[in-house]
Amino acid sequence: MVGLTDKRDRYPAELSGGQKQRVGIARALATKPKVLLSDEATSALDPETTDQILSLLKTINVELKLTIVFITHEMSVVKKLADRVAVLESGRIVEQGTTYEIFSNPRHETTRKFVGSVTGGNAPEWLLAELRPERRVGDHAVLHVAFAGGEADRPVLSRLSRTLGVDVNILHGQVETIAGHPFGSLFISVSSEPGVLRQVIEELRASGNTVEHLGYVS
Image (cartoon, rainbow, N blue to C red; front, side, top):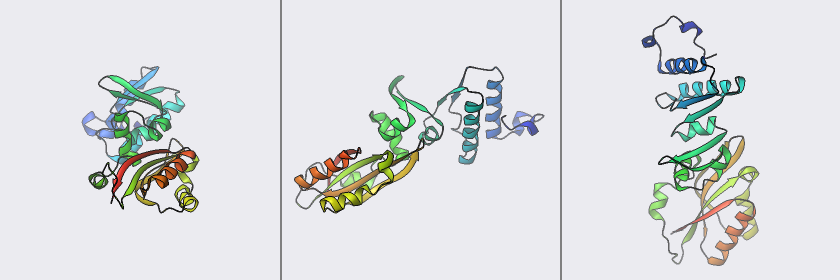
């Protein structure tokens, strides 16, 4: 099952890191456990080997109907492997839910930092350096918009621009698939005129998107 039949007579020192990890998995499965505990199983592996180990764990999960508790700081691994996620800080669970819930709408600050590193939810340094809390004449407002579900692959911003007659500038972000669902995280700038800004935020939220007003830029 772990793909090491041709290595059955080799010594540990003759195996690669990924192969040694497969031996560890085989050794754990030999006891027919009810739960497989995997602690940082991919932390020392290259990206290709990491994908191979994750694929093996998915196969074990499905074919053996075995629950896997996977501990990792790599959110890209969580996104590929997990069905449910629990975020721990100082030994306490601060947030938990399905993978899509955690990635699309992180509520705790620790979760936001972890998730933002792979979803584009963290504002880039150059934007943070230019942001101001107070509005000046001629400024643009900066919004962080999380597009979840069907809205992530629809022309929401162009529709917004046509409906309200405002210019929308995309500053940073990405759109991807998480747990089989489309998800987008974008940083945009729009007019900072209070009436227009209020309309823009209301229109975006009316479609079920999460909108956060971060500040102003020139």
